[in-house]
Length: 267
Image (cartoon, rainbow, N blue to C red; front, side, top):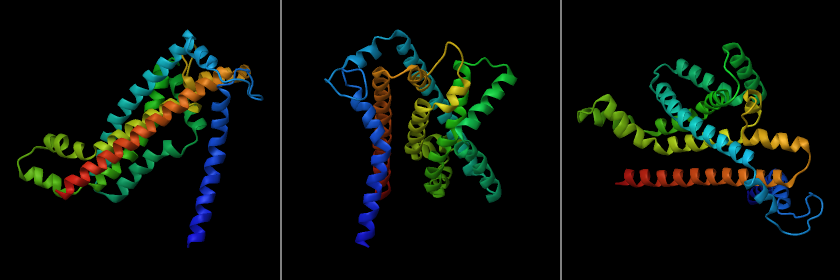
């Protein structure tokens, strides 16, 4: 048993090394004064200064953050509503059908999703740019929020709602004072995951972005095609670190929420 566990841990370490080694290689050379990714000469912040002194890049950063925050907020609202709707469906077959439709955008390849949105926006006459990127990000973020919120709803005891009704609470009061406070960790988790997906997405955004509007992922790809520049490494490093901060924040909030509800249950 111990031997199997040891081999499992070794395998896990190897997988993480393979996954993260290219990222750390990229981050390492973002501090290279030599300007190449072959020979490290001296430690420098030159490439980070170049990133922060690029007006066009700063506008793209703002575009990316605005799209991510708006799409995460709107998709969280829609995702919570969708999770509540699925939760209240009584028929098992209908509930499974709704969950299947919800999971389609998660399991479908990004290329197909991006191409589908491109065709849809072209037929609908929607100009490619901020609106098209925002709508597509909302669309693929809503199913993620639903999957984050639904388990918290399923953990909630129906007796909580019954007790609230017995005490004279109407449906709105039950929703705002019982259900939403209980599923708050799931809501925050869905918001942070939607924010992370929006910040990191490239494939879908590449299809639906237009002239004059870009996001960081698309900009990094465009600059990489022009040739090796360590400003790309610096920009990618900043984006990676920001994503890590979001994920850490999500786990901290989830653990605090779980602890609070655990203490409340013991009381």
